[in-house]
Length: 507
Length: 112
Image (tube, rainbow over all chains, first blue to last red; front, side):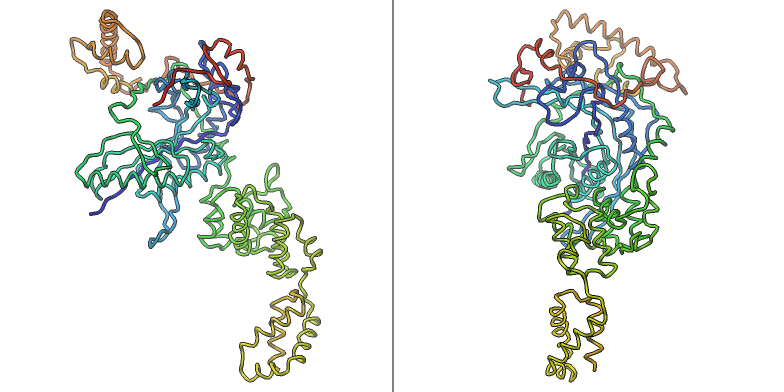
């Protein structure tokens, strides 16, 4: 019998502000313990929270980017519980009036085994602003716990999805799309090792068409791999339990990556009773239409819109377009490479408006074909990054450098094999294309007289093979191309060489 | 405040004569980590019941068409610019802490 897995995700994205959400202490990661814990972070008596405009603006950016409702008026509430890394005894969060509601995110679920790739829309229930807690260190303080409150008060956007995902693969695709989006719009650095992007997964199972089953929540998944493993384990555990006549009880569970299994943290009966109420220290947050419009004007072109433009205006395949828009770095690199020496700056004062970036049509500004550029980026550049264990942001060559090289391919100065040589040199040693072509002598011979002379020589020196070719042994053509390329030290323009050889061999 | 009302209803089983039982008071006291004697519980039960009676009276007022307020003052939150203004004052703050080590505040062991 069939089972359906139902998954909803709660993601805590740490907002990339310089200061905390309710006070002017720094949010920089990795500082000495408690050096960024000021009087407000410590909850000393008499302190009051004052909301950070930067945190609210990032929430607005997120709401706009997901087509969500941005509440003209939202309210902060106290979520009460006792834990030493929460010195106030409550977390300031939002409860029934969150800042963002009813958004959506389009996700691309990759092909798996026999099922093809597909697109899906995941609905976002809400996103609300809240403060992070500090950190507890349980190891080795003579039976005591050490508390570091540097993280206390760091702004978080908790993004809650509807239970719209039906497999671990969909949950991972959603988490990845969200991770890419928050970085794309510059509201979160997405560093999962440092805990800037943390996922909780609500998992339940049911017979297709049946009402939702009882869910268990897997807490604090800090990698996409763990997210996938944890959901698969948990769903199978729930199915096995039900098949064996057991029942699922609502609970919070933790994933143990070493054992690859989930285990119970607390049951519903022990669950916290948070006694939310509106925080009297904070007035309602008002967001005007003007503020929204200002923020909207600073939003970059979003991945979905870019994808559509790459397909529609640049003639790329949907596949290429989705890879090129997987991250902002990738898309920026692509657009720079396509337009390596713009007459207008790409950003800042007097920048070329994004839609104009492609006014050169499929060949961009510099006569570089979009498809050629995409191929190099998805092919050589990505392969080298993989080999060296780097991500796009750490790429040793720039979009300008790659674009400079593509220009020399397009205008016939270098052949494809010459380009590979230029690329290898650029990657390892840096440098500009023209200088590398010069120093390595990679310039293609496109002088038709020189190529004709070369071909004449080869025909004269191999009269037996020429006769064989002329008597129908077509396969020998490759042999002549090889000889001619060798004679030109690989520099002959291949298209021209082919044409001359074909003509002369025909006799 | 209206959205919170169902929550209170859920927590405190209401009866027309006695709003709260001593067990309800013990529960909220335990959630708030308050140690209370039986006598104090009785006093708190009576006082809290009075508050609930008042709330019930207010609930009876017809508020149709009136927008709920979430704060007693009808003004909006002032915002601060995203600027770091605080400096490291760890030594000052830790001078009054009962126990510190390696820059950390030490508390009795808590493992959930």
